[in-house]
Amino acid sequence: MRYRRKNQRGFTLIELLVVVSLIIIVVGVSGDIVVSLIRSYNKTQITNEVEQNANFVMTKLEKELRNASAVTSLTSTDLVFTRGLPTGSLETITYTIKSDGTITRQITGSGLGKVLLINNSTPDGVYLDPDASFFTDETVAGGPTVVKINLSFRQIGTPTVQFTQNVDLESTIVVRGSY
Image (cartoon, rainbow, N blue to C red; front, side, top):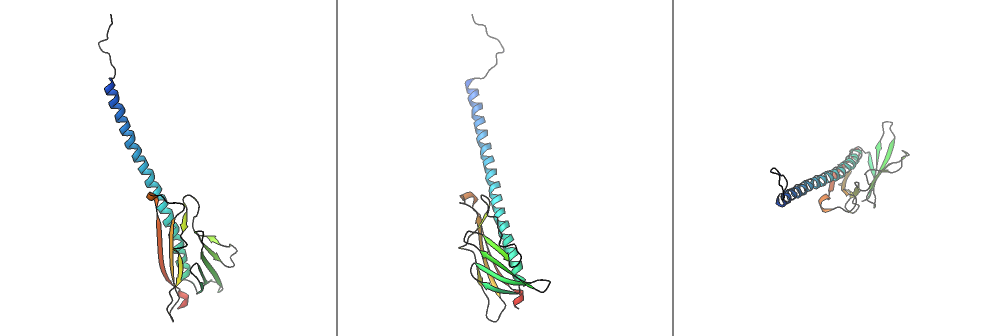
């Protein structure tokens, strides 16, 4: 003879399946939210890095070129100009767009050599597209020296669809020392 307790508690198979199903749904939805947050964070980081590098290079180049005394050499990949120092002497500054996706700045006589202006470290660095970046002379005969700058930046490496970030900057600068 079997005895049964009156207040016997336990789960039925159906109750157990319902609970397991609900747990799976909650974990799945939570996982999607976490993955979405991580992707959003990564995209924001990439966007910030590309935009900060692009703005830094363009602002520095515009400021120095605008205050230059004269442009001494201008090709599609090299911009060389002079600027006056408070001592009355001149210094020569060279900006070079390199085929490896970087841009450098060199001040002749400073002893520093060429200085890299962008973060080109992997995986969160920036690449300057040498095919879409260039300097052009827009000077009109008899007028002041005018230089047009086109720079195209993107993140380093092979971009995935959700993380693609490009920044194209264009600026036209009138050299103050030329008028």
